[in-house]
Image (cartoon, rainbow, N blue to C red):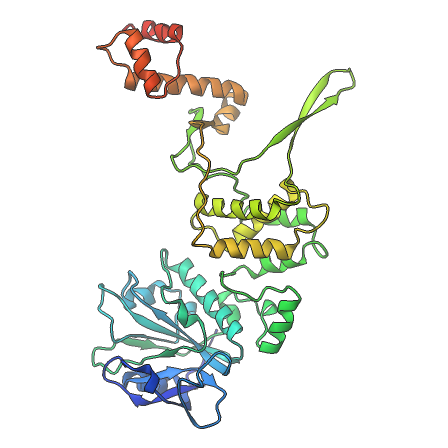
Length: 443
């Protein structure tokens, strides 16, 4: 980012100006203006509408010319913030100084702390010359806002396209701030190597399987470089090790940290896991004894894509805030450890497409298999007490059964009646075991 109070930008400014929000956008006409940031703020405050620059045959143009196909260039990115939980002032103060928009102003329909509606304008050092490049930068800005303001969501996604038009605010109650921040796309982590600022090159890159679709916000450019290089510049195992800490390979709902003196971790009601199937391979040791080594049954051709896609949907349930990169990393691990890919059909391109489609999928629901287990063994307990998982499992099962019996055993009923009652509540315990428990508790 640089600071330049002399910077001039070119954009479309409406011939008409409005005291209230326009109710018929079709009648608006625009004319190109090259103006300073302060001059743009003054036009907004007078009620003029703004739009990007389009290829037109006449000086004055309207809705018919203002299309993605006719898009010429943009010197700024404009975002609509609607119905957010922060007032414009609080929103602005919550952003890092280096990410504060060049202009921010309340819209006609804003009511502080009721609906909170305002607009952000980010001025860039060089023109943006393709709609997909524009969308890429806009999405990356949104992603950065989400990192700095927890819970933020861009509700009006139409503003991600360069063809949109935006009202000014000619009301006396407008609130606005502006500065001389001039941005580079890389200020927000946007990787220009993956996107071309030219429509013709974008089409060529799409043919060559280069990522150009930003329906999902990709913010980690180094990760994406390594991902696309994997297989000819970077070994898959090296890639997995490099990002293992940043994007843990989750195969089940993350569980809370548990004290090392407790042998179990209780599973939440919404616990979900990826189902695996295993087989045991018999191995003969030097002394003739046979031991067994477990191997995962790998996904075969015919089911791989569907099961990988379903795995992504399950991970969205396990971790609702999961990023596109995290999904993609998990798919790389799946391919490495649980997929038979000797035919090399499950390529990087296929993994990317699966991750993108699953990340954007809001319609399809998947019903996870209900987990029958009540708990898993706490590995910290095993480590601290130097015992095996099986031994810890036995201790945990006994402790949990004791807790359940203390809660559910009815002192007014006989042992036999209690046994029937416990059975109806899903508690499995033998007659002699229950008698021993009653005796140990001196009931």
